[in-house]
Amino acid sequence: MSTVGVLTDSCASIPERLIEELNIKVVPYYIHKGKEALRDLVDVQRDEFFRWLATANELPKTANPGPGDYLEGFKELAQRAHEVISIHMTSIGSGAYQAAMMAGEMAREVLPDVHIEVINTRNVFPV
Image: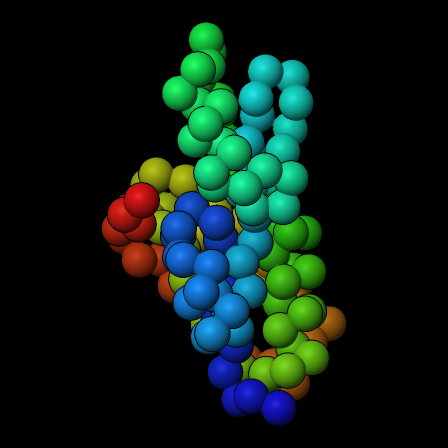
């Protein structure tokens, strides 16, 4: 069992190779394409999204994952790590950090043996 697990969300834009190599848990953002809600990197992959974006008449809207999404990520990481670091873009630009903080509080109740640290990078990740 690894001692530290890393969790972030799909707006971090980490290359797939690194996600797999470093065993990072990525929680998907939501992309609203018209009335359709898609999970980033689950229901729509980057190349497909960018092809659609080039021809879109209306820009998509995004929504950060909710506390329940992050809680599921913490639970998954707890199966292989004693500590979790959860890294998110600035709390000024997204509600992801706040949602992850709420999930961290919920996780501390159901995963008392796992230390969880949620980090507000105060930055926007490059794309």
